[in-house]
Amino acid sequence: MEGAVSSTVSSTSLTTGTEDTNVLLITFRTIFIFCDVLCTVCGNIISTIIIHRAKGFSDSVQVLMTSLCLADLGVGLTLISSLVSSGADWWIFGDPWCKITAGLLAVCLSMSVFSLLGVSVDRLVAIRWPLRHPMLITKRRVQIGCVVLWVTSAIIAAGNVLMHFEVTVYLQVASICYVNFSPGAGGIANEVFVATVLCAVPLGTIVLIYANLLRISAGHQRRLRNNLHLQPTEASVHTNQEASLNQTTPKPTTGNKGRAALNSKALIMFLVVSLGFALCWVPHFAMRLYGAMTGGPLPAWLQLLYVWLPMSNSFWNVIIYTLMNGSFRREVIKLLRCVRCCLRRRIVPQTNESIRGEHPTRLALAGRPRTQTLGESTVK
Image (cartoon, rainbow, N blue to C red):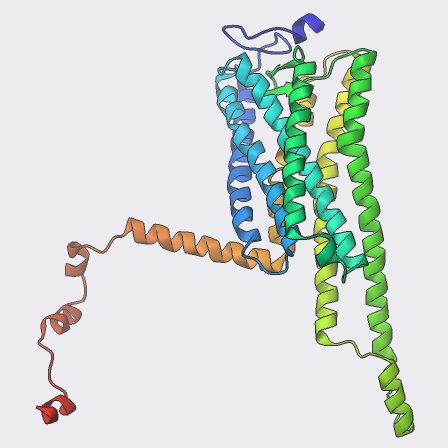
């Protein structure tokens, strides 16, 4: 097993096995990777533009969501090499680029986790301490934090690739360069550590944060409903008692109700994003740990699933934003309409031939000399 894993680039391929993939698998895999790369790249470019145009996102959330989109965009751009290699059914870019690709994927995927965790912490502070949120979490601090996390992720990914240089190989079935799991006690310990740092701790923290936030949001909604029911409705109440009751019981305004509904929708949207991330990544780390414990190769379909399921998560967020955020959806529609109008103008330019094809009456009016109006003749 170790001999197969530590093989170098040959004239045909760099793989973890010697089995040839059939034509049906190659076709399905190439089509899937093409759709994944297209949706990831285009979707995250659109998301990066829309996040800064849509209303309802604070400055700190905009920075964190932009970092998340850039990380997912980096995944899509890196996977272009896998798309080309999938069609050829062997790695054509050489061993150095294989190691670099594995490192880039590790950096971008790590930043996806940290960005989601940052959004969760930001929402917690914004709802628990709304008055202190602008002072505690400023745009400048979030930008510096994102830069530090990107640099830290790059250092960790580079160290991981160098430490596991022999097992950073091209998985032919999945058509991707990846840091493969290694059997034995050391491999199991490494998989447990990586799964704890990149999956268990972040996702556990996110779940606890959103459980707390949903509880707070439910309490706010309940208090608003109680305030509505506490309004005086009986005509027999004295005027002074009504006045004192109105002074002690604040009436929920339309702005407060709208703000509470907006916070609740935003919480649910980010919770769905986090659950989608967990759905993609928990099976991935579970399969890696299982492979390290058993020491045997995984089936071909399972390799394809456990590798590409987390890769596809890079375009899930765009779909979730569009479906669950009305402002984001309106900006997407507006941007697509602008792109369509620009394409129409470029495809059908205004030329002399198009002018000759206009209506005869319009051409006649254009060639007729301008008649003087009553005011002009009077002045002359």
